[in-house]
Amino acid sequence: MDKQGKLEKDLIKYVHNTVPRQEIVCISADLVLDSRYRDIFKEYTFDVPFFLTDDCQSVQCKPLEGTERILLLGKEPTVHRGMYNVSLGIFKSFLFTIHCATKTIELTKELFIPVSCSLALGQAVTPRFEAQVYLTYSSCILEGESRSAWFSGQQPGEQFAFAMALGDAHPFVCVGSPSARVGACHDAGKITVFSIPDGVKLYEVSGTAQDDDFGFALDTGYDLNGDGWDDILVGAPSAMIGSAARAGYVRVLSGKDGTTLLTIKHTEEEAQFGWAVSWAGDLDGDGVPDFLVAAPQASPEGKINAGSVFAYSGASGSLLYQLDGQNPGDAFGYALTTIGDVDGDGIPDLAIGAPLASPSGLYQAGEVYVYSGAAGSLTIK
Image 1 (tube, one colour):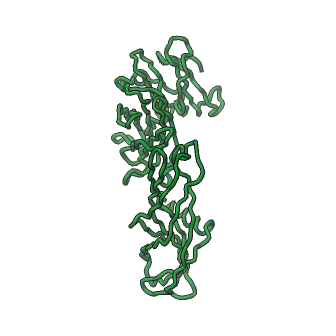
Image 2: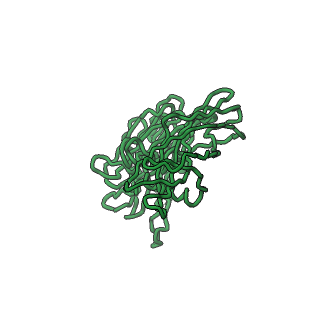
Image 3: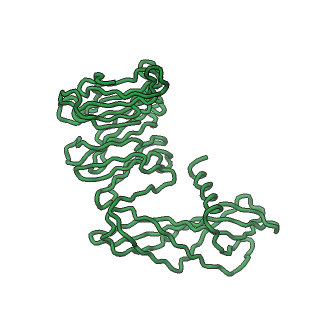
């Protein structure tokens, strides 16, 4: 079942089991049942996805013309031939304008109205419905205040906040949505960057193809291009590279505007390169921050799914060294991080997890390895 089908199924369950049906009389193209319509009054409450809304004084709401749509949620035959009790979902979008002391914020929200009615559907196997919503009254009130973030996904199933990272120099939060749909591409994925403290969306960057899972892994913390902004590592571990399914890629993005600074593509099928990413600091002594990328399903030297971790130069994107799992199935690189200078050589060192490793015969007990960042040599196991 695709995501749209799942959404419709969930809505059917929602209407039948959760929301009391609204009373309304419908008109069929074949038969006018009644000319009396009953007004629906429905109140919606939702959180405003911004920081510091305590300086906002008022809100206006305006219905957007031409945004009505109708979804058939279910139909049941009645004792009268050709007559059905029908459950419908009516959708309409509104523009909300929030007036604050230092800014004006706009957002669009689609509201859902569940209704039920009786219709003469005749012999149509797939009846066609049209929605007309006549708004007689609307009012909006801005209540409360918030000094914390509240953001949310905008698509069913996009998995907003699957990964997150914070930028410090110019404060921002980067949010990954690896299952977001981009155009016709399901699960292409995207990242969304919001400024702190005002919570304004700065930009979005999307995956380029279906099933990329762009935004699955994120990290910030170093300024690669010297513009004063922390730059962003983004993993897309399910991307197809050439004919290699789920080979994966990583992009380095400018934290300032999302411009692509580097792209590293993997070519091993099913390796899931980009599953985990981490800035590593300056590993090679050239004054430019370097970074790590994990491929926990890689099969180095024929060791199936042993996993690999790759250290790359931030200056050129060239490979500095590669670390591999010791045994098949270890999933080496499932998680990784830098841990400071453990061995005292002035270079940050690395900790890498292999959660499916079986040390001393303990099935999938897991292991963590600590490596020298300078040479990639094993320090602690």
